[in-house]
Image (cartoon, rainbow over all chains, first blue to last red; front, side, top):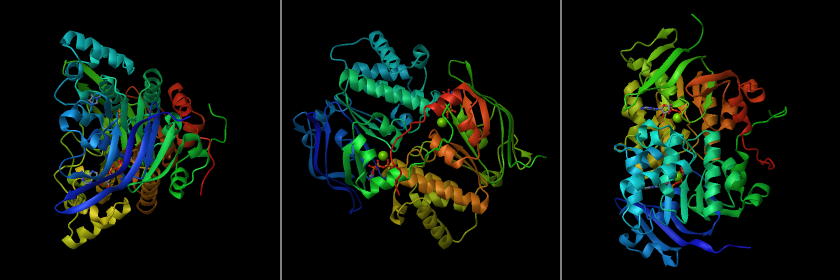
Length: 273
Length: 260
Ligand SMILES: Nc1ncnc2c1ncn2[C@@H]1O[C@H](COP(=O)(O)OP(=O)(O)OP(=O)(O)O)[C@@H](O)[C@H]1O
Ligand SMILES: Nc1ncnc2c1ncn2[C@@H]1O[C@H](COP(=O)(O)OP(=O)(O)O)[C@@H](O)[C@H]1O
Ligand SMILES: [Mg+2]
Ligand SMILES: [Mg+2]
């Protein structure tokens, strides 16, 4: 059984131009993100995973980046043809994005509370007071399993550890209940236990709200943990697309085999504790 | 004098927060690092790993404690250029740790110019060699950090640290932003350097497989303190502390056949 498609990328071409010199990231990239799935995007560093996610969000730097061809269909429309104003109604609302580097995604000069209140009031359909928004902010922080919420809302981003910042960023991304979450290496800087918590959180959001997730990672352990399907990329091309179980059991492309083969492993001769 | 290259004793860091309350991020941390040795540091996020790493590298003043290199303790008044050259740092956060106004070439040339007297042609040659070492094509020389992917920025950061030819490299999550093939290439490179030149590493990573593959000894941190340290095999195979046991237990086991 296949779910309906939420995002259809068709023959997408992207290139960067600097002083008349072009660097092509995609000649022609096509891929589907299906409703309610967690699609993992893995592959070579520099292959275009982040560019693909930023293309969906229309976040590539202008005018350096150019869409040379193709479409990105979402909700019956081609995102590439929308005006900036129309895109603003989607970006950060129906589609949200989280990054590896939460520090640069948060504003250094405002407390977490202030930033979240502003964001919540921006998305709120009717007038939401600051008090009410603060209560919502604390709720969201609790959802991402932050315990000392009263303290955290008064803190500045630099005062939080990497794991805390990451959770704050996820809480902010979730504030608008997005249909699609683009997660670009969100757990790369976290230790295994916090990573496991964040992954459980993302699985919960998928299960409870039917949120669709595009999850970019280099960690095949993470892929194994969360993915429904996996796409492997290399130099701007999709080299393999398969169900998770199939990918690990029977990788077809030589590059995929190389990736899986170079994964460091621990050999436990003795029973695990 | 003990024969250790680096000795850390009773290291503390208290952050003063805006509210005025003090927060002890690192408490009474002591360890040694030998020449040609790799000490892995693992622990919860927020446990103080980066804080320890930055104090060791001289990028953050310690509140108290002793950091000694080759038997000589660093004073409060900052480090000499020669000392800075000896301990290099690879940042956890690749993108924001690079000066956005410098091109890749100049980012890598910076430590070469700072620490060595080299003719321009030689600098160019070394930049190219370092780019090749970290797997970046030569034509990336003229790019700015914002024109690179996350993993490419990370590799520029690694090349900068290697350029100084230090005796210790403090590596804060150096390879987590890299794909498995590049990651193993970088780990191989670091191991080779250690064999050839006796470089020591203080190696922080949350990927326990990486820690296992590179560390001689491992130190486990929780809430600002060391809970356990020992040689790699005993930490992984006979963890004593409950927290270490839960870490080892959380390693994902992927049942798939080996390739290649
Ligand atoms: N603003 C830019 N200007 C020029 N080139 C860019 C720009 N942004 C990205 N690129 C290039 O586009 C290619 C794809 O970058 P992208 O960030 O998508 O890689 P990635 O697959 O996410 O890699 P990583 O795993 O290292 O994060 C890379 O070669 C990168 O150098
Ligand atoms: N500049 C700072 N001001 C206040 N607290 C900080 C600062 N930097 C880090 N901390 C706190 O110190 C603790 C340790 O942080 P860090 O060393 O980054 O941890 P790790 O690298 O192990 O994730 C965390 O609780 C963090 O919130
Ligand atoms: Mg990327
Ligand atoms: Mg850290």
